[in-house]
Length: 265
Image 1 (cartoon, helix red, strand yellow):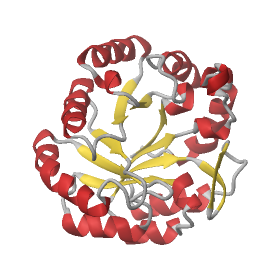
Image 2 (cartoon, helix red, strand yellow):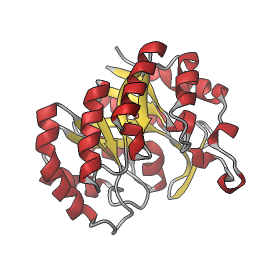
Image 3 (cartoon, one colour):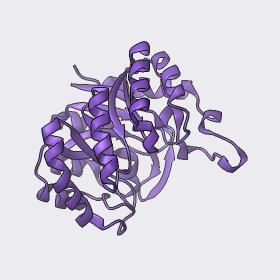
């Protein structure tokens, strides 16, 4: 099974608007599964989660996963994220890591995972560790070190095509070497290998056909999450601009049409 999904970063950017654009736009686009980006702890409070669940029921959307960059670094956030995922009825938590060499590096990540993995297993939750350009989780060898220390099937790799492309990683080789440990996929386009500049789909040079066909051939089962970064645009936040000034539903509709051919029952 492979299904197309969308992250709220694609509709609401980094704006704190209670995911209003996602709930308005995604039913029109025809995307059912949603990854909720919880940039601040308030997004995963009991009250916020209750509201998200109610609005999903009203709009026909399904919570797929929740994302926070605090899962690895903050024990309180990690506990709340696990509870929030269960309250929403989703089984995936997505987290990135600190800048490369900061926050304790891979040793800190492994230490936190040793602590939290038994809870993930007990609750039936999957942690999807996302690669980021110049972060502690950037290259295949970073993940290999983590997976050697944490063999649990509840901890895996969230493959972000844009960030791996920016880091110059051969994703075909990575998919082969990480077979069975890739548990989530973020789709993002990027200008060229070795340079980080995210683009609208089709404007960059990520070879999605090769990557996604390799994933399918490798037996990947899960979701392909559209993640159109606000960094595509030059948003002048100091001047009061927001991502809403740039969001175009037709761009998201085009992205859905581009990738829906990879869906599998």
